[in-house]
Length: 375
Image (cartoon, rainbow, N blue to C red; front, side, top):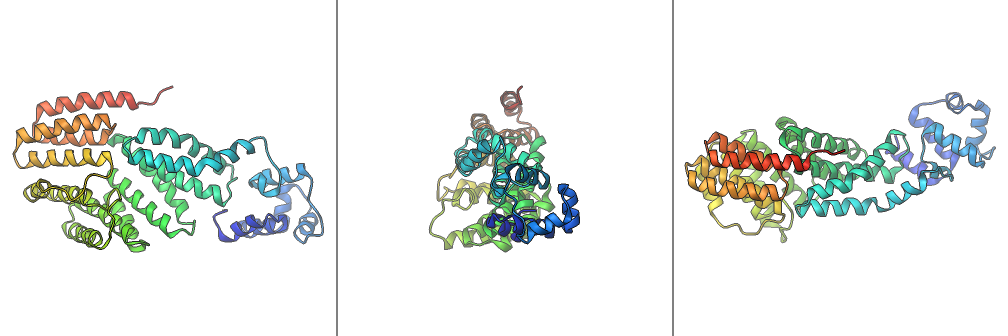
């Protein structure tokens, strides 16, 4: 409700008559219906809205905030939980920013541990209907960051949980009047849908992201993710166009410091897409060429290792594949990346690499035990 621009304006006014009129308009309530909700007489509501009657009592304002499920501070009063929640909101942006840094540095488990308490408190407030525009925006960013972090640490059979959180972020992002954040949310949600094997939905979200991108970097990142999804969907024309668009953006921008929009990541995305299209020979050629940049995040080194091992196995180089995939197992366990271990296991089982399979299964079991919920 309070993502509506008119409601946000009413909130900012801190004027009770304005807030009540906005509440009635948004919920399509008459003065009589609002009076019944508050256990007041209709004439009393009319006098408050016209400014003919003051409404200054603390208990009266607490009653009104409770019945209308409004944040108490908007009416100039507090509830016992407000001080703690105000501190949470004050530092919420910093928590999300630091969690994103931790995830990009290869510490996604730490990111989840930081984000979960924040998002849980915000969700509880949302369930009570007591979010103002700032905390609504904070909840959207928290949901998205949590979903992306979960998408890094969850095994494949639980990746739909990550997509649920990014999808909940998208529900809010559509109402926040922030095109850059909407585009970012579409990209991240599309990527989590891809990992959850919902490829048509993933491609639809990523198509939308390319269409509304506000910067060349955002557009290039959206096309990088679209290339990944199109490759997995075995849609060669879409894959080829997306790769071409990525290269065009890379050639046009000066800095390549994004996690996806850089030569290292694009090389892996290109090779993995070709492998999905049953073209292992050109995929290996791409991976055999030195990357024009280093990986921007530790997990991308692991991802590239797995793709390289898969490609070697697909081209018949069993000794080379065994060596590379065993190295990938060590790195994936160290970085707590169960999804990458499961990629190794699929490649090992498909190409009868029994040593790698046993090695990977043992590592995955250790990682499952480490990441299992406790308490």
